[in-house]
Length: 136
Image (tube, rainbow, N blue to C red):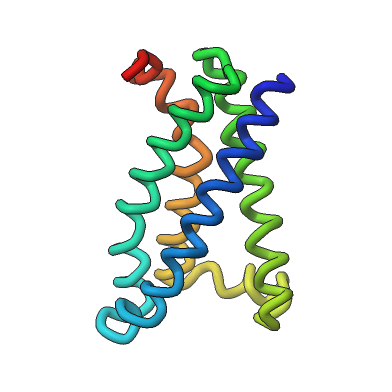
């Protein structure tokens, strides 16, 4: 399990950094044109494709066994870190408190974002199911 936790931490860190970098153009360029939901929908394929690629590389290098349980641990730990990281970042940026943020989640943009975060968490496990563990 130590490999899965280490891989989950690396997976979170790299995808979180990429998401942070993508947030600037999303907010400055896409949100004014397409609205918050449209901008998130446009960004999701990019971040989830990157997540798929990073998950494969990290799982191979750590190495995390290509079995469902360690991959679920990897994704779940990354998801928990993502939630903590986003909450902490929102607090640092003087965004609404966590309770208020949770109450806003039922918006279209919030639900699309949450769906993307859940897919992010499931990617390591999905890669086991589709046999995406061969070296490329």
